[in-house]
Amino acid sequence: MFQRGYRALVLWISWTAAALIIYVSIYHDTDVLTFVQNDSSRITWAILGLFAVGVITSLALTLMLTRESVTIDKLEKAAIEKGWPGIEQSPKTGTVARFFQAIRSIMQRNGEVNVEALVDVEFAMYQRAAHALEIIGNLLITLGLVGTVVGLTLTLSGLTGSLEALGENQNQMMSGLRSAMGGMGTAFYTTLLGSVLGGVLLRIYGHIDEHGVESLENALTRICLVYCSADLKPSSERDLRLLNTEIDGLTRNLERLQSTINDTHNSLSALIADMGTPGQGEDNDSLRENIRLRQEHLKTLHYELRLERAKQGWMRYFLEGLKR
Image (cartoon, rainbow, N blue to C red; front, side, top):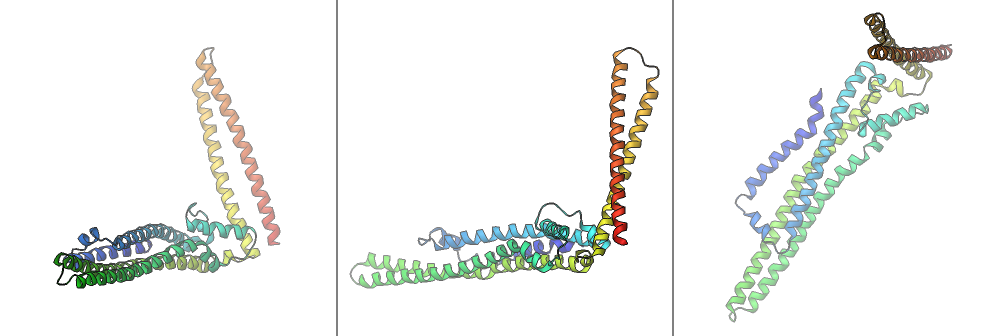
């Protein structure tokens, strides 16, 4: 059940390992790092820097999607067993938590829940982040093309200088040829880096994150439409179910409060039995004060118990009125 929540992270790690293998196999004999260090145009630096930003963004988005996916898997299991009451205790932070908090707010106002629209609104941030990866990939391809044009320009400039110095200045001719070869290197490497890093590697990262966002949206929609549809539709039956849930919660609180009162009463009885006949010392004065405080606490618990029972009685009376 919980393996599905880690799907996006597993795909991201797998593709990262494949990307490293691709990089080592392609660039091992091309000495690309040396060229990047000596690149006078600095376009390859911009490509690598922008690619690093895209990878970091993709990793952060994948980790957030994984956390949300694991949460949804737990909530789906609870929804299968108990329906909407099973997911009442959803997490307090995260996009999934905001989604269910929005549903509760709509239900409290007796409004109709549009699950699809609400999912699109709450997950718009993830959708924009996934779309940003695609934009970064396109920018890398564009920078590669710009580097191609710059490299060809440098090549033409170097060849022009070499032709002008042909037969006159050997050093100037060699300098022009070196400039031309450097321009060809710029055109080649920038095109290669932009197409591979942006058009292949980063684009796959973007598809992985887009698939993760779509999986989250589909899972939330499925939970709401399949397991909680009866509770999300405005009706008197939904109000009755919610009231029954509140009454069950009050009953559990009463049971816990009654258990606390019994424990306090037993502790107080045991303390009185241990005291025996009170004397005049400081220890007996301390014990009397302790007894007084425990008696006050016991009175407070009895008062809270009466309030809880009165609240439960009013809710049952209101529930019976709705049934009639």
